[in-house]
Length: 485
Image 1 (cartoon, rainbow, N blue to C red):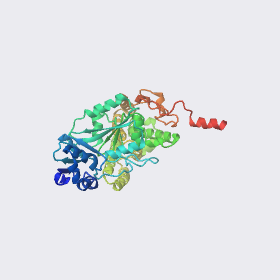
Image 2 (tube, helix red, strand yellow; image 1 turned 90 degrees about the horizontal axis):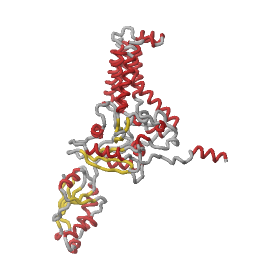
Image 3 (cartoon, helix red, strand yellow; image 1 turned 45 degrees about the vertical axis):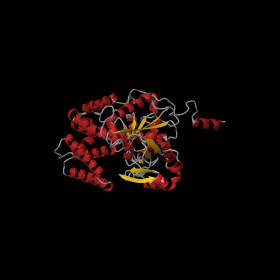
Image 4 (cartoon, helix red, strand yellow; image 1 turned 90 degrees about the vertical axis):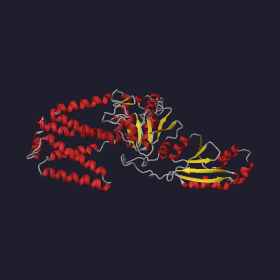
């Protein structure tokens, strides 16, 4: 804590003090824009001509300080809070108010490409750990005065800045009030990351599925706001939250909309298919080899039998061993530095797989199954969804161990039933499939041409349901009509 005391206005002036926290302010602003004007440009004549102390105070407030953001406070606790948040407190002896001066300037990470949501085509900027930088990234994309940003503090000790973003003429008021109510109900010592907020405001904390979407991409948040969703930005983290969240929205990538609709639809179908494979493939292997070998083609059955010759473990034990090894390698690769982690993942997988087959611990078909499962899980664009299905994969493997294909079907019905009961801020988790909304299927398993998506999702109940003029002719029809003329 730095205290700078001096006498302002010469011998006939007043004692003054400047207080700030080292490392949280820009010293250039303090030296050039605050101390220099107050020490050298405020002359003694200003004090002589002042008819009252109050007039001198207002002269300092309105004419002497060459900074943009200044406010007055009378409460001691308010001054301390802003001081700890990086503002400068300016005190003048004899006056019962403190002047708060905006001069924040701590070190922060620059804007870089998000590592968790890489794309081929699209913007490369991502959120950083500074809240005001993140809100500016959204403002750059949505230059509409209806974009509202409300800032609150949560955490008795950390008093973390939380920004609530929404489109005032689009967002549904009930959803907005629900979000505000849940945030205001949070009573805890600290909010150190947006994951704290996610766990406090989600509907069902026992579910493995995320009911809040986390993203590092500003374009993802901007697109969500324009659909009527509510964004939550947390200081000190690059991850923003979007609510409500549905399985459909969590399986989408921002790149789907930057490509032509055929390409976007194709990649989205691959994504859903890969997610299904990652969920059921190991359990399907267990069920077919242990309970229903008659369903396997003869040549394939002979190949599987030959690969498992000499393997001492049953199929389910073989599958659990390999899946456990893959999860261990995946976690180890994440915790190590990037170059080392990639090497450990690839080399470790090859060595363990080859050694396990050579030692007759597992069959080669099982290694192929586990590798295909791991590759399929990487196709899911949202990490939280991918890890949820990774957990459920073991649940289906247990069901297949005891009941075979019947167990897989029963397990899938339990998962679907659970997802059908989930809600995210009043919105069904399986929208637009349950409840069924045919108009919203244009942006589900496939992505329709952007000209055809003229309305926002109906399940969001937005104030303004239209993205574009619904009566305006399609640009392609218009061009064809002009060509016929």
